Amino acid sequence: MNRFLQIFKVKDLRKKVLIVVGLLVAFRLLAAIPIPGVDAARLEAFFGSNQLLGFLNLFSGGGLENLSVAMLGVGPYITATIIMQLLTIIFPKFKQMYYEEGSRGQAKFNQYSRMLTVPLALLQAYGFLNILVAQNVIDRPSMFSLATNVLAIAAGSMITLWLGELVSEQKIGNGVSLIILAGIVSRLPQDAQLAFASYTPSLLPTYIGFLIVLVLLVAGVVYLNEGERKIPITYARRVRGIKMYGGASSYLPLKVNQAGMIPLIFAISVLLFPQFLAQITSIVSVDFALKFNELVTKLLNNRLLYGAAYFILVVVFTYFYTAITFNPEELSKNLQRSGGFVPGIRPGEATAQFFAAIVNRVTFFGATFLGLVAVLPLLIQSLTGLSVLTVSGTALLIVVAVALETMRQINSQLTVREYEGIE
Image (cartoon, rainbow, N blue to C red; front, side, top):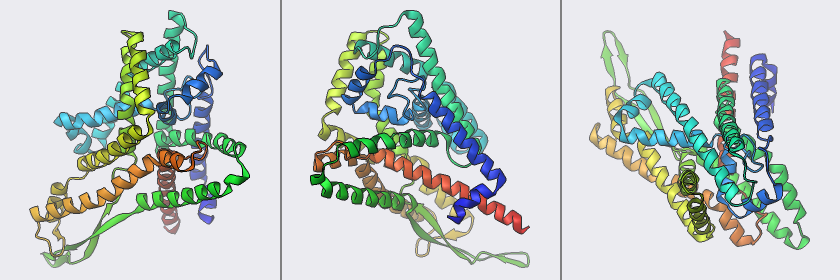
């Protein structure tokens, strides 16, 4: 509590927090401006028949459920980022830019991602509007109105991305993540009201059990994000001139969940990719796009098929992203150059193999837990038989991870100011 009050006592930090809150409020106002010709009843029925749109609404920050000008949110940027990440595997130049050129290379990489976001936003806006027209969710607009809406939606997506970057500049959280968080939190009153409206006294044990599971799940997500395997490291003694260096012992922390939220985002993007193709093909043939979209929706509305696919994709992408970001050979070389070694392990290739084995074992537990969190809503609905008693595992993981990261950055700024006060 004292730590929380310190945020508002420090003028500079208080200003940053108020700026972030103001930017998030601006985004929520943008997400409340609907495009013309929206029928709320038809829109609600359409959303109820397609659970994948719930994921799209999640990454739009809640702007999709009322077809606002910010309906795509940061979705096109996330897609662009994933495409750029995959390009680092195919083209060594992109890999060198992102991983070896430091902050300048990453800034250039992010600039390319923003440039790719524009055509993706235009394509997604046009394709999605065509599908909505074909399903009678919105009235068929004129060519001028369609072009205007496409430009407005693409502009709304870029404005959302700009607001996210302004939030990131305050250095008290990731802007894109906080925008997604704002959309999730904005739905809490509505979900709570729906749960209370459907309450019946005979189901009180079910509600209590649901709350217990929810608390345990939050604790598990926190443990997953903060959990790490500490590998002991010893540094050999070296003499340079009249001074002796090394001889100290330390440890190398390997996080249980090194990939963070990325596997969930990758898995969702793969599940949404067929629908994205349907949006693109609607440019050529609306009828084919509509049939293709209905087929995808029918397949993924099958809980067993959808849950199995989601779980497998999360596990696979957890290993995939960990393999990209963690290089045991490079870590072993850097450790050997600095005179460090793992006690009982020969430096060089043996150390690299040791690191790889440890990471694989740790990642297995992290990937399995992530997969279970991802399919949690399906498990809860199957056990309780109530659709209102559910919680999006993806949303919960995002909320907890973003909250922890934001508080970590705020604490670091408070700590810096405490040291400045000592000086």
